[in-house]
Length: 113
Length: 112
Image (cartoon, rainbow over all chains, first blue to last red; front, side, top):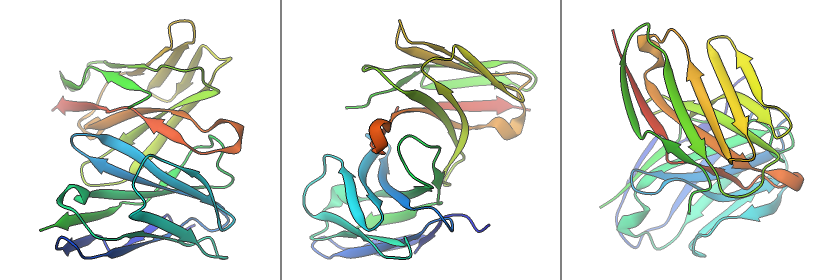
């Protein structure tokens, strides 16, 4: 089985722009979660999608949004980028969520200039 | 704020030695998980221990859980250079919701 695939791996943007990151979960996994990882804050939960519905949301501003498609693939969008959005964005999937072990992609490294 | 907090934040040992990392958390849990992250990569799930378990083994890994103290420890025996990575504990995700909270991690360096 292919693992979790995140694209692109690296991205450079400037302040004020917007960005869309993509995540393809393991086949058959219906739960997809997104995390932001920074040296200062560690891993912060962004949101979880299950069967195309946002099931849980972390404490991030509305500039961060996501969606999930019928094939379980997920996208995350960040609008009006700020310098502080520079981070590694990780996507993780599991069959049903609910505390099951998650399978992570290698992330998208986003740098804001 | 982080639910789990690992201790120590950094650990350097010689190959062949044992490495012990600790995790403390704040609220009651259904299970606790440990993950490993190699530099620049995603996290890899290592082991899950349920709240009604006290100890679990997987290869060279031994995890203990003390729910009365809200703490867990991860022991890696006979460490290898390939064990060099950051290790995170994670809690949460109960009731069908995957709002899992990670600690800040322990950075382990195993010197050959």
